[in-house]
Length: 521
Image 1 (cartoon, rainbow, N blue to C red):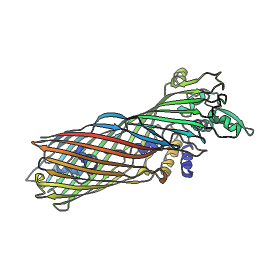
Image 2: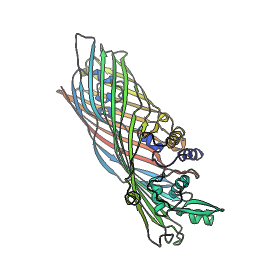
Image 3: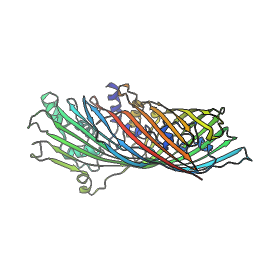
Image 4: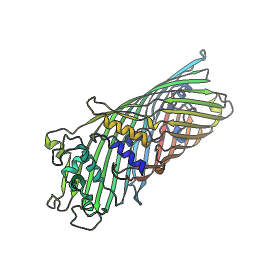
């Protein structure tokens, strides 16, 4: 708990005018498998096999294997499910089905028997991250309240409790809490402190409040990356390639946090509150990838690739609503309600939109492939392969910075310090294989994405087990794949500087059905 408290303190060092937290950086870099059905069927291991448009997003040297043109399209279905455990209580998520589009694009290959060098060009669209999810958890908490985070934020601002807050340098939720009297001042030991009403009577009585807490989160959107790549091969022995990516980010999150009094006392100035927050973030980025694949022999291939950090320019907006039932405390028995209209529109102000930049991690990839069969130069005579990738991701190098020169950089410095304390660099491993039976193929794969968290207690990881079949004949192909994702992660319902923080352990079980159709030309 000590380290969690230190991380929280680093975050609270700056003003909460902005909403970035370390989890925002991990969301952009700790992703699911992506690529065509064939690539995902072999565990996403595409660093040295080549001949698949997915290479554009891992090792673009793989595009150099193409001798002809190709068009592919990849529709998919995601089946969402899972559970959350919080303060000893387990809660199953509501299941959901989402449709989308995976890797889709063109490759223009060439073959010149009179030249030792041949080149290929590719343009493709890929869903490199999928943010669709549903999370639910809850339990009984006797040592902290979400209202404390609002109280800490307001106390740090130094403002009097009764000032108009539409332009105040505090978080949106803090403004709602002040307008509904969920936070207020209290005289303690001759001084005045800002406190949350769920804790107020407990502080006065010298006891602990018993609170029921629940959080439900629905997210949607993703990162859709448009990429352009060029690759060449020298005598079909050495393949060199590069690509430029333009990721487009769209993320929406609706979270509902409820807290209610479990004491049974109908006259302690707190019954319950509900905070519903709508957060959206969107923007565009830029990255580059370079790689090489070498045929060490007819049976062995080795690949090496470097993926640059993605530099994002992002913007965000937060709205929401809070309802506080404080029994008779300053509300005459009525439920206090505040929302974005209360704070901004009623004060003739626009809902603010904040702009910031994010530098995502480096990725370094090494890969190897072993092919078996007869006549390796003729793909029709290859009987199959085994391939593996090892990827190193520098999660600790993620950095936020203000996009507007007038913004105070101190808050971003606090978030970046928290990233250094909270996260570590991680290894991802992917392995897969294929067996060919004339025009049909069968595939299996597995991937393990290591924890990005420095705290070992979190036990976070992501595993993907996959399998699929494929058909190739007469200049067309069809691949069908199923991927089962098993993920362990954590979620902090709120962060406190002056109290121990607790978190929910999340277990995600997502199934993906992916179909890729391709046509040679």
